[in-house]
Every structure is written in C-alpha cells, then in structure tokens.
Image 1 (tube, helix red, strand yellow):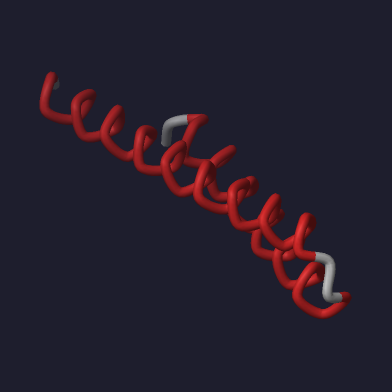
Image 2: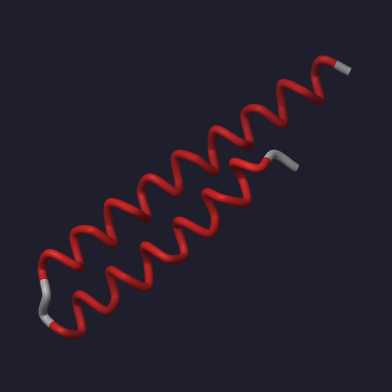
Length: 59
C-alpha cells in the first residue's frame, strides 16, 4: 500500500472534521479550509491508488 493512500485518507478525514466544525460554529473560513484539505486528501489518496496499480501491473 502506497504511503500517499494512507496520508491522503488521514488528510481527508481531518478535513471533513474541520469542515464540520466550521459549519457547526458558523466559521466560514474554517469550513472552507476543511473542504480544501478534504479535497487535497482525496487527490493524494487517488495518486497512491494509481501508484499501487502501476506497481502491480509492472510485476
């Protein structure tokens, strides 16, 4: 399993929590930062998945 998959999943979870806190408290800045972090985590996780697929195909 690629490190990017793990790191991306963690970043995605942290972003979701931060986004939810922003929504609950009415803090738009925190909400937007959380959404951005969540999306970056999704991209990072997907990059890890692609790297894993390439490694599997190379075998």
